[in-house]
Every structure is written in C-alpha cells, then in structure tokens.
Length: 288
Length: 293
Image (cartoon, rainbow over all chains, first blue to last red; front, side):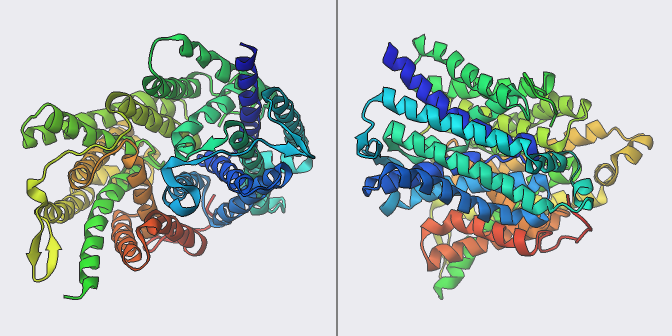
C-alpha cells in the first residue's frame, strides 16, 4: 500500500513540473502551446537513449532539458511573423511530427515497440534502486523547478510576458522585444518539460511513442485550467486533485482498454465545462 | 512511361484528398475566424460510421455513405450549436475556442477508441481498388472518383461562395459581422451554415480516405494537420489558396517519398510549414497585411 502511494507521489512530482512549465506559456504569455507534450517526449527519449548507452544521471537529465530547449528554439523562430492562433496550430503539427518521428525512426527509437530497460539513475556512485529514494530525488527537483519558475514569472521578464498576453501591440510600442520575450517563455517551458520527461523515462524505465500522443496532454491542460491561469499555487493543488480523483476509477471492474478512453473523455468534458462556466479556475486572475 | 509521371499522378490524388480537407477547414476559418480543431474528429467519425454501417452491419454502400455523411454533418452542426455558440455568447477570445476545439477532438478520438478499439480497421471495399493501366499510368477507379469528386466539390463550394445569395451573405459576415447584423443578417445562422458546409466536405473526405486506405482513430487529426498546413501554405485568406496549397503539398510529399523514403512523409509536411511560416507567412496567394498579432 505504501508502495502505491509512493508511486503516485512520484507521478505527482513529475506532473507538477510539466504543468507549471505549461503555465508559463499559457498563463503568463498567452500562447496556447498544444504540442507541449512533444517537449516532454523529446526529454524522455533523450534520457532513454543516453542512459541506455551508459551515461550518468546528471548528463542525461541536463541533456534532456537542453535538447528540448533547442527544439523549442526552432519552434519559436516561426513565431516571428504569425499570430497566436497560428502558433497553436504549429504546435499541434509539431506534436504530431514528434510522435511520427519517434514512431518511424525505427533503427534508433525501436519504433512502436519502444525502448525498454532504462537503468535506474545513479548519482555519485549512489544507485537509486529504491522508489522511496527516487521519490526524494523527484521531490527535490520539482521543488527547485517550481521555485525557479516562480522567480522567473515574478521577475521583470515575467511582467513583460504578462503585458504581452494582455496587449501585444502596446508592449511593442513600449520598446519591448516581443518576439524575444515570447521565445524566452517557450524556451523556459520547453526546458522544464524536457527535464520532467527525463524523470518520467527513469521512473517507468520503458517508453514508447504512444505515451506521448496529443490526447495524453489533455491532463496537463486540465490541470492548468483548474488551477487557474497565472496561479502557481492553483496549479499545485490542481495536480493533486487531477491525479488523485481518477484513482477511484481504478477500483471499478472496467478493463484498462475502456478505462483509459473514459478518463480522457471525462477530462476533456471537464475542461469544456470549466471553460464555459468558470474560465478562471480555482485561483486564476485572468481569463483567456 | 517515366516513373515521375506516376509519382505526379499519386501526388495529385493525395492532393485532391488534402484539398477537400483544406476546403472544409478554410470555409469554416473564413467565416468563423478561428481554427476549428475538432474538424479531425468529424473526418474520423465519418469514416468509422461507414465502417460500422457497411462492414459491420452489412448495409448497402450508397445507403451507408448517405447515413455517414448525414450523421457526421449533424454532429458538426451540434458542436457549433452546443459548444461554440456558448462561447460566442460569452464573447471569449479565440484561444478559448481553440482549447474547446482541442477538447472536443480528444472526446471524439477517445470515444472511437472506446467503441472500436485502437487497432487499424479495413472497410474492405475492394471492387473499386483494382488498378487499371492507362497508357502506362496505374490508377484505380476509386482514385478516379476521388479526383473527379474533389474537383466537383471544390468548384461547387466556390460557386456557392461567389454566386449564390447565401454565399454573398457568408462573405458579408466574414468581412464584418457587426455591419452584416445591422443589415438584418443573422450571423449565428451563417456560422452554423458554414459549419454544416465544412462538415459535409470533411465527411466526404473522411469517407474517401476510409475507402482508399485503412482507418485508425488518429487518422482524422493527422489529415487535419495536412489540411491546416495546406491552408497556411496556400494562404488563409481565400479558398483557392487553400486548394492550391493542398495540391502543392500532395505533390511535394509524393516526390519526397519517391526520392528519399516514406519515413520523411510527415516530416516534410512540417518542414514546408516551417519554411513558409518563416519566409512567407501569408502563403502563396495570401495578401500581405500590416502588423499581424
């Protein structure tokens, strides 16, 4: 039983990093990045490939963040001359391409069969074979990440991002480099999505492309919108709610093949109803 | 016969399919001014309804096609009525509509996975797929139907928009809905109408693709990405731009598959999108406007 709660707690830590990083783009900058799970996938695959070739935890972990960031840089170049709507379209395309890439590039990623046997992380000769130790590691990383993101969004950069969300033209007329700021927000969020993907790959020690389809990212969006835009506290609470409540479904007799889609449908319906009846979420300060 | 001609023909066939999808997306985008992300769900639903009625319940092909089109159009219409209208009433921004469309897409896909399973399905209509040889070019009757039907539908959509009364009304709402409303046009009805027209075209595209290839729950969204890419490549301001972009994309894609490998089929789509967004974001036929926000 205690093992079950530790597993759940590890997942909560990982989801917190992803959702808070998504909060930067959606909540603060107002860019609807549908393809956020693509960065998560890139992080997970980078870690898996590096760890399978025998690299230590720190290299895999940082490399995941940096590779995601570089891909994010590529994605944000397109932002220069297009509207926010079109950018979310590009993100959707990006997500599909990442999925297709990992699925079709069979000689490296092993295609739909996925990569298995990812070793447990080792830090300074200390092997984290136990889940309790791994929980401590993810907890520390998620606390540091949330703290860093909190510092970023409360800094002058964060205020410029909020200004861009509210009125892009006015921000530009104040002499701010809007494109650079948007790119920074995408890069930061890509970095944190990448490192959480790394933790995810280490935790499951098996990944395949179907874990990173666009449908899966509905959970992250629901977390961000339940918590409320521009509220990191809300996001933390919402992560607990969203990961704990559906655990009740586990005790029903339905098989997993039916349960998975049912969970997706419920999440999507919840998101729709939330957008219609309470677009501010729990602690949100702005509406989209 | 030079093999490049065959590749060109295949490119035109896939271009015709992409053009149908791009046309549906474009007509909804032109009138409603937001990207209808749930369009992929309509495409998938149409193909799966055909699978249900034709392959599982063994109905007549024509009857199943009609039922699938009517049902999926009705679903598209009710999406507009139940969800999008609710958001328009609350005067929310475009981003909310995008998120709502995305949520509905997830609902569609999960529903189909729940009912039919995640595996690949075959509709199994083989009579039309026997390849015939015309002066060295290989084409099946179904592919001929695809080309003719898509050209017919594209021209009728163009006719509808340019030369009929309702088309004129639609263009009026598109250019300025407030003035259109003061002239006594119900813009809500026009929004619904555009959604119906777009869903019919999308459903036809879904059926044709379902007959031509195998279907899986994700294929509609995959095609929707191609449709959106075509719209952006060709220029989102006009229907003809979207169609031009679709044929362009189809031909380029087939040539890449022929010269390199099928692995790059999806990657080239994104690569083209990327190149166009950086160097020519208004598209081939697009009109350059001042600051875009």
